[in-house]
Image (tube, rainbow, N blue to C red; front, side, top):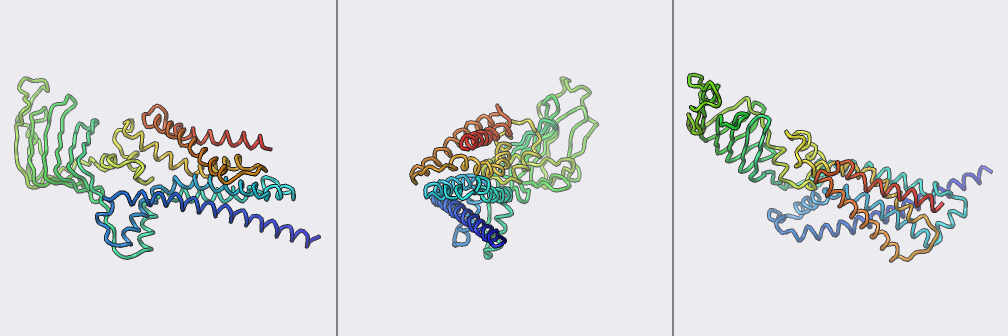
Length: 393
């Protein structure tokens, strides 16, 4: 009796290993096809290869490109692998043989569900593309591929503190900026001072400006002037009333400077600079940096970035839901051709992404919240899967 139980357990382990092998085989083939298409897409973008002079640098460039799509490909891979695995089991009558031998649907699918949970954790880990990219660079060794972190011309308007900035360029990595224009005004829109600087840098102690000009305007506090490379207020000339007719739009103070330090200014242009980058090109960390540090949390400019971050979070349970949907479609004893299986998988992927694109458009416009817009397609997948599983029982 004991020998029989041991033999049964041994055979069950063989079946589980076989199912996992078949699933991983289709999962790997799906990734190979999708990344081959991405590779061809990268080859058509000629400007990406301007600074590439070695195979290692090209490999790093492709890794950087591939990692940005990694979390999106996991749910697709899980869906295709599960659908093909169980469809071919049904086609070869192996699924019917397992059920005839007393294997319950839960036993047949539990191993694949377990693998899907592991893939979900990998999908969560893959969101930190910067850390993964650094790991690949360290593994490959050799020279570095210098990534351009300079963002061209953009505007930063801070209504809460009545300041507007213009930058010709800003380096996100070291905080250096060129051709800076700073306008400071009061709550009524009257100018207080203006700074035009050739370059500048934000430090932990404030803003440093180099080689520029300073314009000071009369106000109730007096006239802002430069002394010892800092701004001071000359109260000897002041206006008692902001609406006084003595106030003019012309500056009362004009001075060139080689260096100017403003320790009271800590306006960080990084979130505004990152807004020049498409949401899909940013890592989860960068998306969180923009959303959490942007001065106006209700700005519609943040909608695409909130949506992208929520999508990355939803991709984690999305792997599990993709497996459930594929199981609902494939747990049948009917024989199906390879063409039918392929067409079925493409059809459901297409339907899912049409619904997702529609919800994304509504989310970017702010009509739906980021969580609702992202959750609707996955909720539909879950409802349809449960209904089909119950119908097939």
